[in-house]
Image (tube, rainbow over all chains, first blue to last red):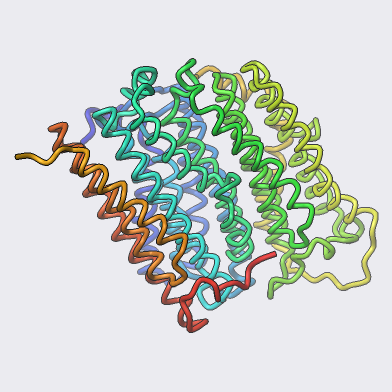
Length: 475
Length: 101
């Protein structure tokens, strides 16, 4: 299976998570204290896998008979997924206690979904993309419906399942056509022969079907219907994972498979499609979000518009765009985790405090939380000293370099619109007072997770160059 | 006499379109799910066709993966449909609509 010890060592992040799933199953089966043990065990394995992949980020290699890549940006993605999942675990501990719905499977399925994401990021073969995607998606369907007694959780999970597997159908059919025209499923072969393959109509159809399927997964415009419903209905901590890990994994799979899009004129064939979905999702997301009253639905529409900004990077199709996309994904992951984290912390037992107006006057009642949420809102809106700004900046610069200035201008316009509903939260928190009683259960674990992600957002915003250099080195 | 490859491809494209149309028009969650399975099977037919036409076995291998994954998806999907049926006593997706703006 492994050619040598080095190969095994490079694969350790995957092996740690895989072994962690097995051990977690055993803990859940045999330990009476699994509710106490499992979350911390998951946090530890996620951190171990994440630190390993960050520390050995330079060990670039291809392992398992050309099936998986390790090192470089693959490891950067591993770190994003695992740190994100560790934050989700910390947020979940008290959230689950609040609702009184503990299932040990929650953490096990969380781990398996991260394993799926990691396979997608490292894939060197369409087989692996497909398997990783399905491991992630099937785990997500279960996680969305974890709170199985509640009707809106059931509904969220049914919608996610039906639309998610519909998208899978497109992806598999696309892969079948790509295989038929390229005669192989190896991504390296497809990348190096891309220009020749795009002369074949079968291949173009296959890639388009593949992109359509992934548009569902990244929640881009014509295929976004499931996003607000799923985010609203599923547990808040799980929605945090969908909007960050799920989206980052889908983008990592697109980057891995269609690296050729970024490699020259042959990729420009798909630019019109990508440009159209990016413009539509940016504007649709930002405009509809203004009309939302529920915080989770607002974040869902904002996630649609962020998918649009990221798709600008795909349309731009140069190496700067890849760096921009990865930077944006890292920034977006931690911003959104913190935003959803604060929502899940403030959420009352029966889904109270979810409307935007219940955040009025938070600035005087809970100054620390309000300050953290304000930082996140500024960052999501793309205001300079924070990470969100640099993510957008790098992507727009890449678009300008690719002679898509109009797309960058539309992107700036859309983020100006979106600033309205992000800053509305800040205004509500600091300049409105509210008579209503505001009850929520404080949680130290969640606070640690939120502060950690806000710190990462600030660090990425203050020293963007360090991280960008790291990414650019491996493209 | 061998059947030309186009026939298989047209058949599977037709199956795929039937599946997509089924997902978009049917209102019963189970029938929608069956249409999704039809889409996966049309992809399987394409893979097997190409595999035998090109004389390499990757496509047939892929079919096994797709079938396994479809089985896993069916298990999870039917469980979700049962969970919603217990709470609501319907599987009609037009009536499952408490979430909207």
